[in-house]
Image (cartoon, rainbow, N blue to C red; front, side, top):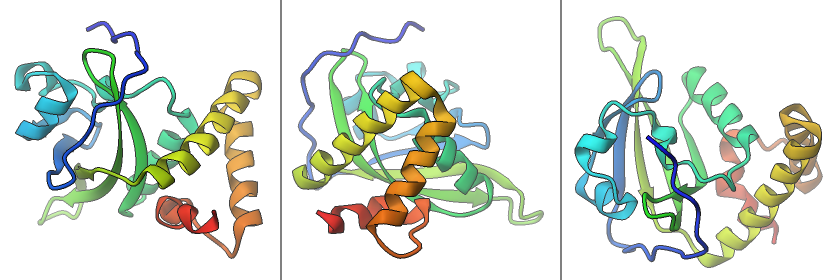
Length: 174
């Protein structure tokens, strides 16, 4: 499936509705609720079995997903602010709560549940600036340099803030 060309038009989300999906342990979509389908513009058939990256916007720095996968792979839940790309090229910003799903018998991670909701304009403005800087560094120096910048950024902003908490904490700095 060909990725759509991004256009500069934001999808306005309903603050009372959640975008929900589940994936297997590799990130392939196993469930997408009706609102996810409505907002993304993809049908259930187009989503199920596809990598969740189908909705990844090119404005998202790779380091965010690197650290996100490291965190959930280590068995920790995480919250993240993400800019997604709809099938028609429009975008939408969301606050996502990633929860690990485990096999009850073995304790092995079998997938992930994600609930997404609308996020405030203020947080979007702060995160968008940070993400633009991280993306700029990635393009010129690579993901490792971008990660180093992010770690230094967090250290400058306060106590020992872990990446897993950045999305909840960062808006407090501005």
